[in-house]
Amino acid sequence: MAPRKLAAGNWKMNGDLASLDQVDALVTAAAGAGCDVLICPPALLVYAMATRVGTGELLVGGQDCHAKASGAHTGDIAAAQLRDVGATHVILGHSERRADHAETDAIVAAKAEAAHAAGLVAIICLGETEAERDAGSTLDVIAAQLAGSVPEGATAANTVIAYEPVWAIGTGRTPTVDQIAEVHALLRDHLAARLDDGADVALLYGGSVKPGNAAEIFAIPHVDGALVGGASLKAGDFAPIIAALDAA
Ligand code: PGA
Image (cartoon, rainbow, N blue to C red; front, side):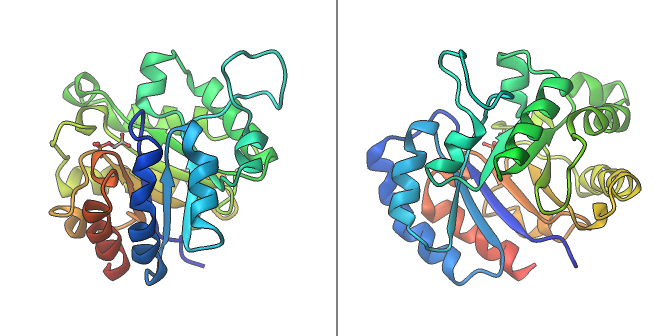
């Protein structure tokens, strides 16, 4: 079994009910694609988007969940609640959450366990800062984040890893092909060593993926898809990225 290709859009804190007008074009783009296509809108829009998508080809996910199944956690959302309203995936440990909400690897691993228990696929994000890359510690940082953020019980069916260099997110800067290849090879090696089906875990690249650079990125060994921020907000930008992944 080869890893399942995935084009995932992360809308972050963007969009409103009117943005759901993008869905029809996204469903069309997803329908013919030989890869999974996922949009993770703000939590408030998950139910409306999932309802609009129906049983179509477009998957809907959350951007975070709590580590606990339920309880006194004001403002938080449980994995089972995301599942209940139609989500299939949840992004966890995005660098913006690690920075804004002080999420550690241990917290991310606990959230991923909660996601798995609720039947969601956890998209676990990792990535070095610019200072870490400049210091030559990228591979050590990634290996440590991977070891600490992927929980027991992870499998190729319930876990996706997204490599997102912090300095490449929303900046228009991307690593070189060799830099992405080096990190993805490390991720593949470490996952294959740790998990029975680690060779089949989908590995996404994220950080300034655009229609213009998608094909080059998808040609890199062990890049099985992308986690896309800005270019996922408009179907007209995301559709060519989906097509590039389909063709890769
Ligand atoms: P970007 O964001 O595509 O806007 O760089 C990617 C991400 O943060 O997932």
